[in-house]
Length: 201
Image (cartoon, rainbow, N blue to C red; front, side, top):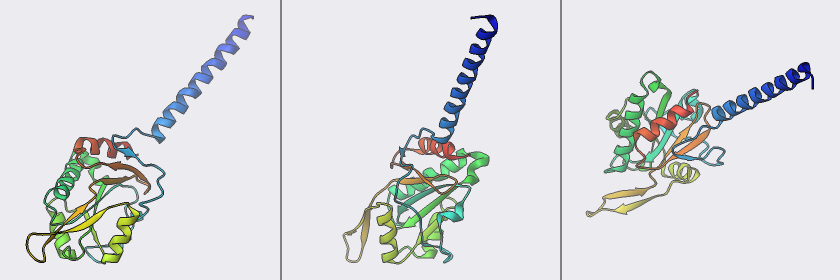
């Protein structure tokens, strides 16, 4: 092979390597590795058709351009719910200037007691930007079923009182409203923050 032929081969090899590197970079951008459970492409948890504390019907489309964290619970929850909401507030702080790109949505599983006023006051303890959603028992049950959320009333020690056993994970949606990650309860704010950052453009 003459010198000119060798240069052609070398040039072709260089282009091939460059293309391979470009494809690798693209695949990393399109498919980030999450700390939580990657549920990209899941055919459930499509939307949150419930009313907020102001009576406005909400949808994931309302939060386009933001990473959305959806969590189900109730305001009288003794530990899981306040812990999760506090962690989401910490994540928002950790994000600094990008904190406004995280939207936490709290879906009440307790329509009997979680009135709009109660929800609003409760969420204000964590962050004023957090959105609380509520609905009729039938609406809440339908949305919970779509999200594969288990919940059940547990009678209290005195008549008329009760707590709720419920699923405790958080769903993360990317800025285009697509379900991407399921975060198990107890993962901690550092894990949540890493996955939220991975979803930001």
